[in-house]
Structures are given as structure tokens and as C-alpha cells.
Amino acid sequence: MSALNKKSNKLESILNLEIHPIDKPEFRSKCKSMLDKDGVLVLNEFLSVESIQSILEEAKQQEHLAYFCVNEHNVFLEPFDNQYAKNHARNRTVVSSKGCITDDQVPSDSALRALYNSNDFKSFLCNVLGEKALYKYDDNLSSINIHYARDGQELGWHFDNSSFAITLLIQKPLAGGEFEYIRDFRDSKNNDNNYDQVTDLINDRFKAKKLAMENGSLVLFRGKDAIHRVTPTIGSKTRILSVLAYNLEPNIKLSETARMTFFGKLN
Image (tube, rainbow, N blue to C red; front, side, top):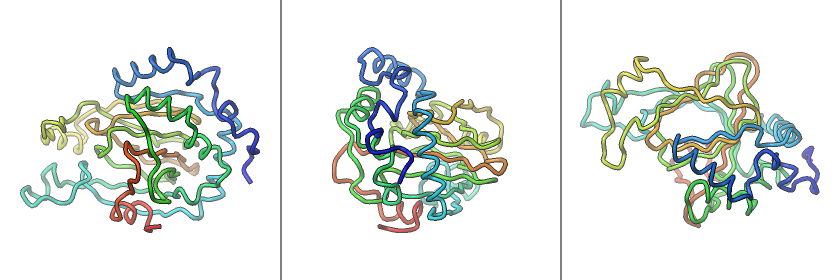
């Protein structure tokens, strides 16, 4: 049973609504303007102290169930392309390593689930993201995930396939685990993958921005054309992050290939 009882799993107990009044049109408009301008929105102290503690307790209790893996991938998250050399930016590989628990392993009474399913929260997200509706995944693994990055584990440079990502930082590590990004690093609409600068970035010849976030921060990020990574965790405190994944259409499942890669299972 989570630390939050059923009664306190209301939005006003999960979130700091005095700081972030997500139901107010002016606040929504301000958030949308920031996301449109910067490609990223960070709302610190989004979660209440009590819900952070509750979610952290759940995450630690479930960590032994996490699927840990190490993946080599190119920054485009695409299969090897024989049109290019192995050391070309299109095919150069980086490493990502983390653990993950899936939606079916998140407790039914979790504050995370209450937040994910909240119509008020989804309405706020739709307004800020400029979308008409958001839907949960039609499989039992992909909607809510918790990621664990232990000492030395990292997320390598990549572009997202989706137009936005929604995350909540649950536990910062002692050091490392920093989110780095560069906006407008490619133009996917015009098939301009900016190979020369991708090569320079992989060779550490580019300085990226660092995103400051604290425990309980909500982050909305547009990563389709913004390359990004999370640097290796340093120390004994695991970096714990929750990913809230929605679709723009109903009845969509994450592909079987992606489920096996990220979760090590299909259901």
C-alpha cells in the first residue's frame, strides 16, 4: 500500500497547485509560451513533498523487478544504413544503459497512476502541447514507466521519434545524471540530419545546454529535432525518473520490437 491513502490521491494532494495552478487558463498559456519558445518546460516543485516520498518508496520497492539492459544505438534510433560507412554519423553508435519497470508493475493506488489518468492533468497537457486529446497505450507496459540509472549508467545522445516527452524526476543522484540538449540540431521535416555536426557532437566538439531540475520536477520536452542525453550517474544514489507516455490516437500499442528492447517482454 502506498504512503498516500486513497483519499489523498486527489490532484490537490499530488501536486503543488498553489505554485502550479494547472486549471487556470493564464497559467496554461504561460506554460505553452515557454514550451513553444524554448522547446522545453520545467516546472520545479510540481509534485508535493508527500507524493514524491510515496512514489519514491514505490519505486524502491519495485526496483528488483526492473529490466536492466545495455543498448548500442545510433543517435537517430534507426537500423544500420548500408548506404553509409560504419563510422559515418548515420551509423556511429552510442551506449544507453538503464533499468525499467513497466505500467503493470506500478501499483494501482499509486499517485503516479492517479496523475496519469487525471482528466485535469491531461487537459493541461493538451493545452500546453497544442494537442486535441491524449490517450494511454493499448498495451499493459508502456503508459507509465519508471527508469533507474545506477552508478555509471547513462542515456546516450539521440533524437526522439515522438514529438514530445513527459517526465517526472523522482530522485536525483549524488552527481552526474544531467540532462543535456541542443535545440534545432536537425530538420526532420526536410530530411536534413546535420551529419557533420552530429559527428562533432559525438566527438565532444560541441557544448550542450544542461537542464536544471529537482526532485518532483515535471519536464515537457520536444526532442524530435533536439538532440539530447543523460550523463552517467555518479555515486551510490540511483537516478529515478518516471516517464508518462501518451498517444495522440486511441488503440495504439508500442511496437513488439520496442517492447522487447526496452522492457524485455511483450506483456
